[in-house]
Amino acid sequence: MAVVDGWANFTNLALTHSGYYYKLQFDVTYPDVEFETLESAEFNIMVEDLEAVVTMPTVIEATDEFSVEIYLRSVHSQYRVTDVYWKVCKAWFPAANKQPKQ
Image (tube, rainbow, N blue to C red; front, top):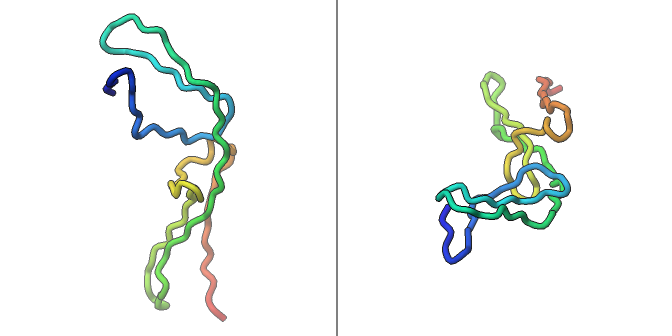
């Protein structure tokens, strides 16, 4: 990362886990110079609302094979949630049942 006139610009920094009392810590690792570690003020990342997304064909013939995709995504950022276990300590197992139309 380049530092220009004392400014470092983080264009792709992302924090994906909600929690309290986070701090960012800044260190210089190269070049080998004496540098006092800096820390940001504490901040919190609040839980985002999630939504389930289901994608599948809109028209399916009785003998057609087709795929269904089910996943969770953040309502605000629209990012796909790939790991919910770390926070809720539960696995998320979507399931589908084949029900013939009566």
